Length: 241
Image (cartoon, rainbow, N blue to C red; front, side):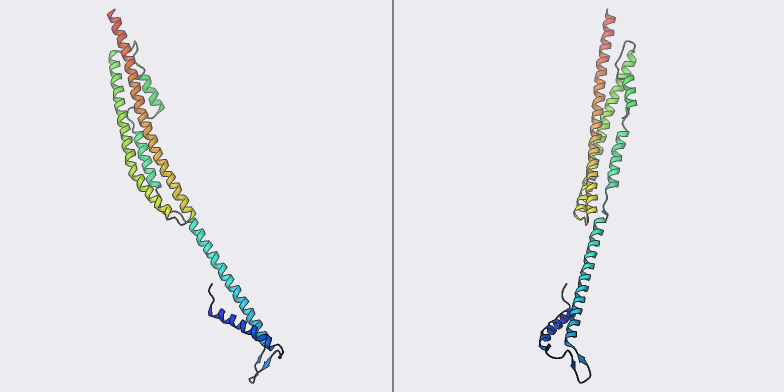
């Protein structure tokens, strides 16, 4: 802290009293002035030194208060919450992707639906299956495969549509993290960036699931076609005999 005029004056008085005190030692401890005022230089020097010490203590206390105030300000910055949040946007994007998966046509993403479809449709024709039933199963399998490829393209469109929102969220989070004033804000920005990455991984997982579903249904249809072909050939051969 810079020296104040009072402090400089006191210190000058201390130096003056220290310089004068040795010269006055042989003299009496006090001097009588005409007005009746008694001046004791030793007592005066002691008072000046005492005042200087008290002033230094006050300066030290002021410095301590300033340090405590700075510490409290830094703590407040570290506890300040990040004013920018992308949680609502990320949740909306995940919900849109989930809705696309829930709208899967004909065969849903359900173990019960899959078991039922493969039991009634994809097992292939047997000797007890009528020609009309084989034709109906083949048509249903073809429609299911076409619908599955359409579902895949819908999920792809949804994932592509989320890219622009992800870019906006990423730019906002990077800007917020760079201007973070404390540890909490920086940590929250980092957590939201991880949430954004998780949302993108969820989109990729949904897309992979849709593509795998379409491929699996098409492979099942091809297997059904082979089984129906063998049954038709067997019937043709038996009728020929």
